[in-house]
Image (cartoon, rainbow, N blue to C red; front, side, top):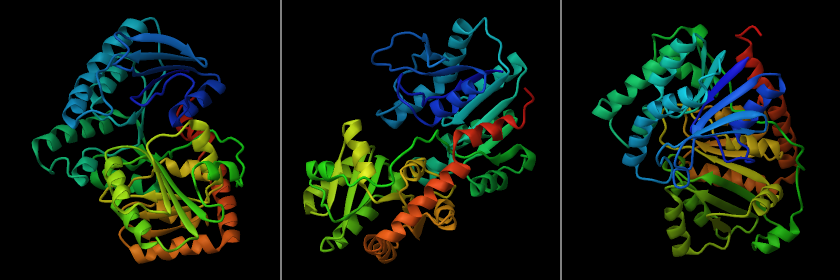
Length: 399
């Protein structure tokens, strides 16, 4: 099959993420893969086609999408479908496709998917990674039934109707989509979770050198939260926990990444100068991987959302055989998933006493951490590899 994959999250060459892993799986199964993604608008002046790891990649000059104001981001996304369509016509005009794959965000490509599906007379499989516009309503970007809500809701309905199949990240996600969109038949919606191509990771690295480099205590249980630092994580909660555990030497917290809430955390750290936590905005990749390897527990936070979320950072914890401690809203099932698999614990976001109790449990029970880490690696191998996602998708198509 010739597979056309469309995304705004295709990384730079030689950088891997969920989508490169999945497309590599298609290639390893004998398919030709064509990717249409966004380019770096600061450097790229026109669309560019290249061959990257046997995948045909078309990077389209898209306008700024990341690290810009919300208005500028939305403006870029509103015009992106037309830019992608013109680039596909120009650079892939001689190609025939058998299947379209595309994740959300964004949903503003709904017209593009409809055009491509009609033009090539092929099926479209939607990988639902973000639910718009409800996510923006939850984060108070705009109100329900406002003009922006109606605009994005129309795109959401169109993209769901256009898709032949919709792959959701978790069972609760699939239930939510069906409940909120009664025009969808159950046969169209299924679970197709985030997935990776696992590598062999050590369960625990003593990490003496890297801990010394970043002044991380040798004998502390290290809790890590790294990546996107957004409003939806409710990071005031972890700031409160760090303050409350200031006199508890057995736990140490590593927080880092980029996002709208980094400056909030920075100001908090500057104000109370915690001795039990490290905050960073960027680390060399090698240092980050060493810190992740030497850490003991991965943290997951979700806040405000009324639609189910399933953060991909969980897969990194499972890959490194780390248990997860979740502080999440009741509308998501990630906490129940890790508890059912015996690879973590979960509390409701906002339950500070319950969270502190779990921090102390992990800090005082190294053997239990080890067992949970092993269970986590097993969960990854059983349910969250790209081999599983590939099989779920291709189960619908004869090749």
